[in-house]
Image (cartoon, rainbow, N blue to C red; front, side, top):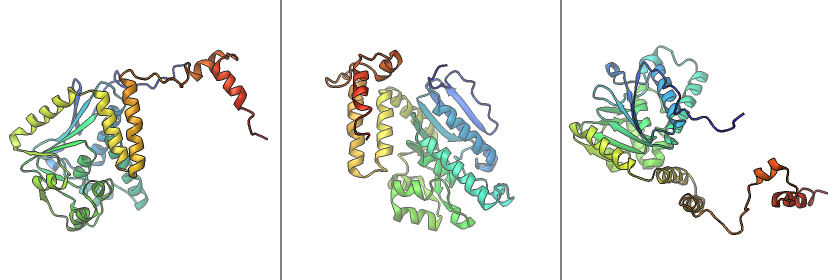
Length: 294
């Protein structure tokens, strides 16, 4: 039986009701598609979004993921009508659902593709939490963003306090969450939440320009840079520098400089499969297995 991890490159694309998934070659475009309710994240839409993200996680073909919303808005966050109707269940069920959403955001953040949030109109609550898990965020001039949960008597659950504090610091995160204001797009750029603000009619053009530029890059290099930046920012300086050093060695190996004079010339698993007692690995195991075991 093959032990090679199965990729979903050839797997059928999931069928969605509330999410549009457009296959644009090396670019996957996800559109939150509940425009009548400002693309609020219902339980059904959130499940579909999570399914799409996991499909992309296991798919080699796509290099860029663009996330946007239908109808002139990005996303109004979690669907409060479902919450008010008790669809989220008891406090225990709420914790379970929040952990599911955290997993969804973490999976999005850790995709080995470059993710771009193309934001128009309202981007609040869970919608803003989606953008914070993306690599790039481009907004229109009319975009408005914030975390208004405080005025609904609820608290963010999957990035509005945690991921935001890592992006803009605790003081500004307190301002955004405790006041619940809706801010202009330019303020998001000031704080470091967004990359660019463009005129409404330029959102598609600017998103395409960015995607095209990224597709020109060394894709392995992009994957490595994204990984080391995401992991390093959560670590102390010396640990993060360790990541950088290992990444530098790995980069050299991918460029062909993988030979190291005092490394093994053969693979341990090949020796194991062949059961060759005379091989270097076999000699090493023989000398090691009973050392200091008394």
